[in-house]
Length: 254
Ligand SMILES: [Fe+2]
Image (cartoon, rainbow, N blue to C red; front, side):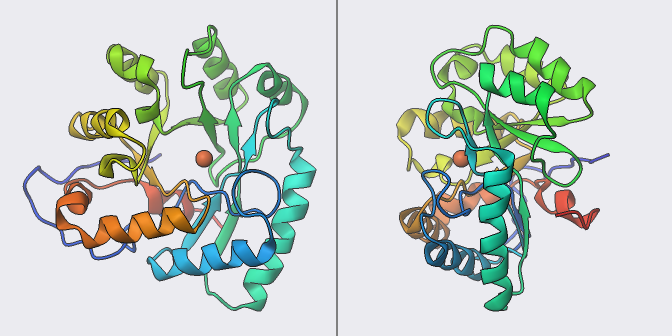
């Protein structure tokens, strides 16, 4: 069981890189399966840069969604194996785990019944929701996910305007057993003002459990670097403790 505690607001904890998180829980590093890295060389460059940012473990999460990325579990794992071999050969000293970012649609519901999902250590499943409307049967799906022994994590809730407009739904998600994962770049305004505002509101309300880079390409890394170099943009990182490292500390699963 994970335990969350938070630093009192105002107490300073210096952050120069992202090593305090130890584990990144959201990225698109598996070559050639989604809109992240295309070739294994690109993947390797992204992994190397994440290591330079201070990460010791990376849980990478390729998209799985029927319309754009109908990736099968086997296709993802085959491609992940190529990345793993390249990372081992390059001796980067980082631990890699392969999960997925499942878009909640009818295809996901079929997968849930059909095959084991690609999970984080500890059977956590990363879920992406529509950015326009919530799935009508979201709570029924969350119940089914948990009945099968998985633990849901909602990816970047700051992007779902309908959630932020009805903030009690954020509490409802947490009351229904979900962890919430914020994108590190959201509070900087990288994805726009509205998402920035949502991110800051979620942080201030103490709703965020995990941080992820959601890294797709080098432009994201440049933006992360820029954020870390700006005390104004990165000060929120110093005000709370997140659960990232606990996800990989208790397990040696891949
Ligand atoms: Fe993502």
